[in-house]
Image 1 (tube, rainbow, N blue to C red):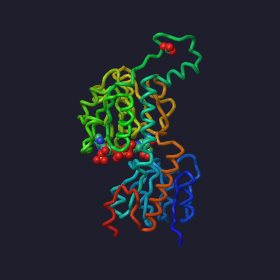
Image 2: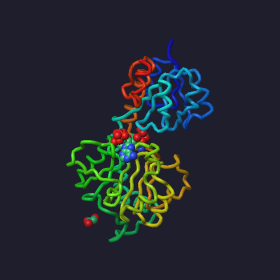
Image 3: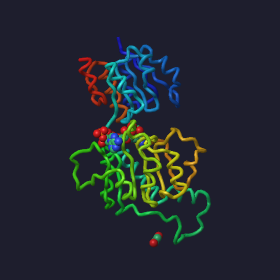
Image 4: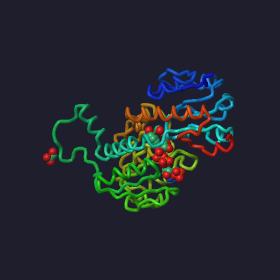
Length: 325
Ligand code: NAP
Ligand code: GLV
Ligand code: GLV
């Protein structure tokens, strides 16, 4: 008998076809996330869940899914999943690391440059019919090249951003209490206070956890340079949005560029959206066609491995295995 699977959104065919071929799979065809009540109903008989970062996989969902053998997230971040509860129940959780690293780093750097050189403001200026002449002081920003970049969370994506910064002759600092043995020619390890006070650009690349929730709040923003730019492509709640709004309104920092926000989606009438010195994008840092295809395949491979009782190629809770095998 084919294993039963629920797929919580139509993911790219390259991965979805792998699931449809081997499983009795149902796919949620809505453009928006599956309503919670329906999701709890849909997981009742399933053996595998192929889910997105917009789905909360918590204890209540796991209680509702007694036959669940694997949870496969179509993302590298897995803060939407109660991993400890999955582990306690012997359920491996898969994610999609690596394939989106450079795509996400490209986007972080694009946001950094767009904010520094006021590209979105410039495009709006033209679209609003304000462009009348070349101006000696028109839309002046700050130089990216030669600046100091501070990277918070020096994992796969943080290090990929550092590599890009090298081409811009930047000095790179990083804060990551867990990163060890990294080449000091690439970047200098510093504490968070030093990073914030010395950087012209601060880019966030930590996972969201209890420890990193509102890691950047009022006190941290106050430590930054008044000319500094904050970039967040990690998870919205790593930055306190109220503190950020006040810091941008009162020029505590110069600008911010956010691919992720708290909440998501950020409503169009949220004050951060209309601030001239804030760029808000709809969580698209990994959204290249090639990368989204690769993510779909990896998430399918994780799902199928879990259903067949094999180790997941990318498992976030490998400590689950001694409990089952
Ligand atoms: P990663 O390789 O695990 O890197 C995260 C780094 O942050 C690790 O070195 C980690 O150390 C470190 N870290 C953890 N807690 C920290 C703390 N309190 N302070 C400083 N550093 C800390 O993950 P990644 O692949 O680079 O992805 C990073 C995050 O980016 C993901 O978790 C996801 O939320 C986000 N992301 C967003 C998008 C998007 O579309 N906007 C796309 C991809 C990823 P340890 O490994 O030792 O814990
Ligand atoms: C996207 O945000 C991811 O975590 O893959
Ligand atoms: C600007 O376009 C210049 O030529 O300096």
